[in-house]
Length: 348
Image 1 (cartoon, rainbow, N blue to C red):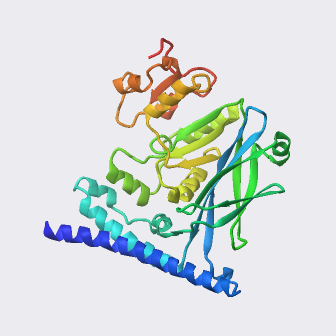
Image 2 (image 1 turned 90 degrees about the vertical axis):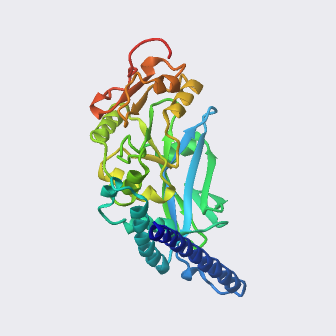
């Protein structure tokens, strides 16, 4: 037991020191860059800063205009991060094997994928100026302490109509090193159908109930799709031309791998919102707040729950029973979203 505790604390210290040393190095680099810049030395060629732009939405407002939202992450990488990715991968693997039970060890029959750990070793670039270029208009914003920026801009309908292509608007985000990155804004009109979908255990098998399995499915195993869900979503897209918005409790660092998985499985394109809430209670609350705007709610049961379980009736109290449906297999879902999915009856 003593040796296990020593190994456990050693791994935690290793990960902490790796992250701390990286942050100290980046802070020293930033100070040196400022000193050099103050003496007229161009330091931009020594920067290794990158940017990740998350697909976001543009909403049509009541007055007929548009609010266009952008979300990005500015970070810095280095050769040292490659080493940290390898060492942290080995440390994480050892730690997982220490805390997992004999029954759970079967889920760690492979190594941690270093590529999925690397984004957690990056250095956030805070307080950096970012230029957003939409059409012929430029806007300025700054990153927060986590290297992220979330902002929105108001546009006239006439300008949006000129800029849009297939209900999308392309834009650029330009860093302080004149590095340019492309992003996409998906337009959501006031009239139309939008599908807001969980990722974990709705379309992608994550097994969030068991934290050990969740870690294994996130960092070790190949991502697995819930059978039939890509085909169902493509059917809805073809029939209703609806927009799709995917939410997950996973951190932003896993967005790229999630997007690649969605592209491989041919899910409809859409926006991604990481670290979102996903409980039935949340959906029930939204349905009560906007009864005329929520047409249907589908909950995939992952613990063998039935549609008449008390939890669901509590979560959807005050919501018409025909508006919500519990399913386990994608084949139970309707092909046509025009009609309510659940059994007709009074409000629950």
